[in-house]
Amino acid sequence: MEACPNCGATGLRSFYDVARVPVHSVLLMPTRAKALDYPRGDVSLAFCDACGFVTNTRFDPADNDYSTEYEETQGFSPTFNAFADALARRMVEQYGVRKQRVLEIGCGKAEFLTRMVELGDNHGVGIDPAIVPERVPAHLRGRLELVQELWSGASRDYDADFICCRHTLEHIAPTGDFLRTLRESIGDRTETLVFFELPETLRVLEEAAFWDVYYEHCSYFTPGSLARVFRANGFELLELSLDFDDQYILLVARPAKGVTQPSLPLEADMQRTRAAVELYATESPRRIERWRTEIRERVARGERVVPWGAGSKAVAFLTTLGLTDELDVLVDVNPYKRGRFMPGSGHEVIGPDDLAAHRPDCVVVMNPIYVDEIRGDLAARGLTPEILAV
Ligand SMILES: [Zn+2]
Image (tube, rainbow, N blue to C red):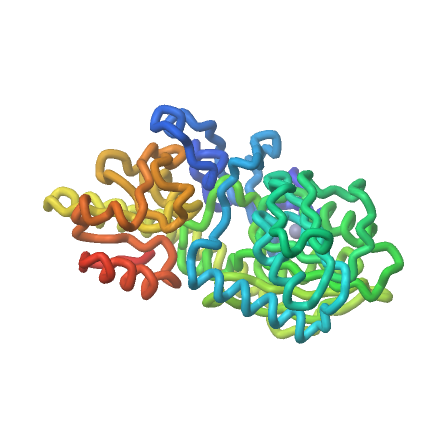
């Protein structure tokens, strides 16, 4: 019997399967042929009744390829930038992160770390296998260091006062080992704060949001299961909250002096999580069928349907629904995605300025938080298609 990679308990229970999805969903391809040919893996979500964790038991870390081609940045969206900027400001102010050493594990393009360095006059080190070390802006040379590697406990000792890790833990399968290694790497510097941010899974389960389940995300946390793995590995919690329209969990912790007990309101979620897993198991097949029918019927009526947002959610949405000829293109505001192709389904990505030529009747927004921004983008180009959001 397989052991839970978060808490070590046995008795994981499978509740959702999708076969042959692309192993990466933000690595866009230069040609349609390569996109259609993209390596695939299986998703089989299993639930741990001991800690509330959800894991893809079919995940194989050997499929990972976080090269510099990895185009994960959401930094072209004003909505996302405003969120990240306000968050960096709050962290600096609320936790007094000034003139300190800030380490970010999995820093992506280092936009957040850059703001932490600027706002708090901090020194920053960003580690990411997809980082381009030369990309440090001129005004931050000497204050910001980018290291192209996959962080491990064996990495150089960075002696950090504040460690952030945003949208990374959900890509790591042995989460319990990762937290233990992190705690060990901090050693006796018990004033060190750690800040984690990652997708919230209760909402995904309760809304049967199948587009939020994809191969790259092998680990799915609720606030409670995240809190439990931190406490089990020697941390005490200072904050456990939701942000970004309740789509993300934010956790701030520091090394604990001994064993700590749950104390924050969001930690007590085991009953709700059990119910949410049951709900997802029954509701997601219906939801998938409803969306498939919705899009096929519109296309049959002669409508042009264009999804907006060529990220992971779109890859999961298209490949789970098995959509191919029903759609022509997808739109994305990130100019680096333009002219590239969606892994798995092979659809081409265009920019908002190319959209007029496609005269869409219906735009499917892949994240409802962007509806207003997208309606504005469409109106600015004289377009008024019907807008649906997942
Ligand atoms: Zn567990």
